[in-house]
Amino acid sequence: MELAVYNIKGEDTGKKVTLSEAVFGLETPNEHVVYLDVKQYLANKRQGTHKSKERSEISGSTKKLGRQKGGGGARHGDINSPLLRGGGRVFGPRPRNYSFKLNKKMKALARRSALTFKAQQNQIVVVEDFDFAAPRTKDFVAVAKGLNLLYQKVTLVLAEKRENVYLSCRNVPGVRLMTARDLNTYSILDNKALLLTESSVEVLNQF
Image (cartoon, rainbow, N blue to C red):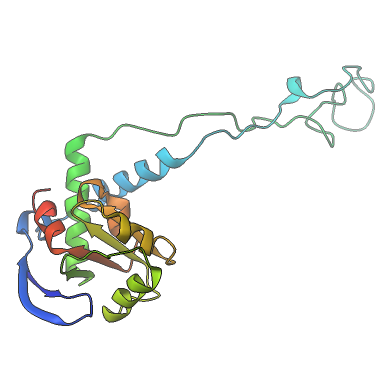
């Protein structure tokens, strides 16, 4: 598969880049593995610090409020009973770890499947390698405007870190900057367009 390469003004340079069929052109991309990888990514981001107090943890009197039978209502003991306002919670949330294991080969297949989906949907744009002399948000906005990606959710993928590019795009809403080595399934899918630089394509072809 070949894609045209654009410059930062959005003009076609006449150059082409070849996307590896083994990465961007899977015959049968695995949707379930993509689901598992995204699920793991989101699960790992959860703090799991939720906590509510149960009956034994409420500060209150332990005196039994009424007799066991004959009251005409549900039986309950002290004021900490879950039946009463201000009482403990039954089976409330407790701190827990949501992370789970996923094999490396499955994660690699998920990334390739996600890249295949983006290629099939024509949501990949390739631009020449670029950098800015100084960090200016206006410069990156001009790049996005030239490529018709302004006001869209975009993941910009570089071959290596470029500080001025990062500082120029971090305040632009909807734009995420990543290096090709750090790209994950969630970041590939969570956008309207995947903006790749020429050199990053070479790295992704080795996925």
